Every structure is written in structure tokens, then in C-alpha cells.
Length: 159
Ligand code: ZN
Image 1 (cartoon, helix red, strand yellow):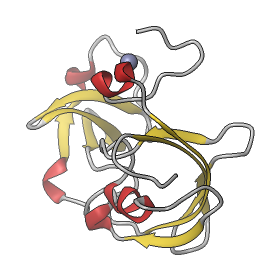
Image 2 (tube, protein in one colour):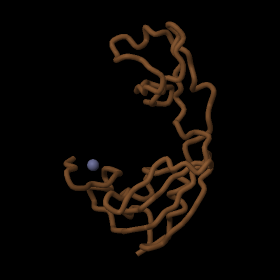
Image 3 (cartoon, protein in one colour):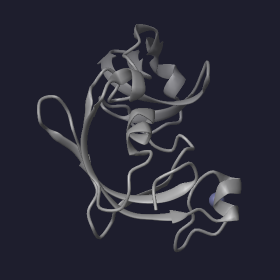
Image 4 (cartoon, protein in one colour):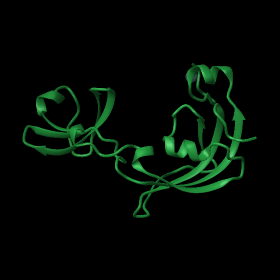
């Protein structure tokens, strides 16, 4: 069986940046399982996995264009502390959900100067090459429900 649109795919992956630092990885006990062809993983990785089969391994570099995008200056802005009224303590590195021009975004606090808070709406991995080492562990057909929802259903997921 090969990976095609609407396959449910389990993979082992290790993600590192160009400096060789491991940013994220899955394990045999807890593999990443996703619905192929629905944009649930970065497009560069999804494209590379199309047509692969169980046991295949691949090492690929996904550029920002096909990963988390390039860093955009316009997504960095400075706002007044009063914008955060009612929220927990503000500190550098803290992330908040905010309403952006194109829908909900996660913003990260990157600078605090008195009442001036700088927030960055870029993905933390924007502008980075994503180096993936992948092994395909399992492939199955998606169920009707999964296709309707656009994501996989697993143990404990009732919707
Ligand atoms: Zn669902």
C-alpha cells in the first residue's frame, strides 16, 4: 500500500534545524499519525511522503516556502500593556491566541519595555529550513468519518 490522498499514515520523525539541534521527534510508542493530503502537516513533508510505503525512510530538507513560511516584519508589532488586561502575567516567550488579519494566530511576546509589549505573530520556525528524518511505520485507509472531519480519529476521540 502506498501513501495517497486520504491515507492515514503513521511516521517516526526527527526534526532538526540547520544547526543540527533536534526540535521535535516522535517515537515508536507515540508516532505521528496524520491524514495525508489535507494539509495537516507542512506541505513540503506531505509532498515528499506521497507514494512512499511502509518501511521507507527519507531524509529531506523543507525550505520555509514549503514549511512554516518566511519571517514577515509586518507580523511583529508593539502594543500597549492594556491590550493584555485580564490575562495572566506577561513575560518574554509567553504565547497568546490573537485575532489576526487572516484568522486566529498565536503570537509570542518578544520584548517588554515598560508598557510597550512587542508581539511576534510569525511561526516560531518561520524562516528556518526543516530537516526531517522520516520512517513510514503504517498506512491505512481513512474512514468516512475521518474524511468528513479532515483529521484522524483515535482512541478517546469522540466527535
Ligand atoms: Zn473529528
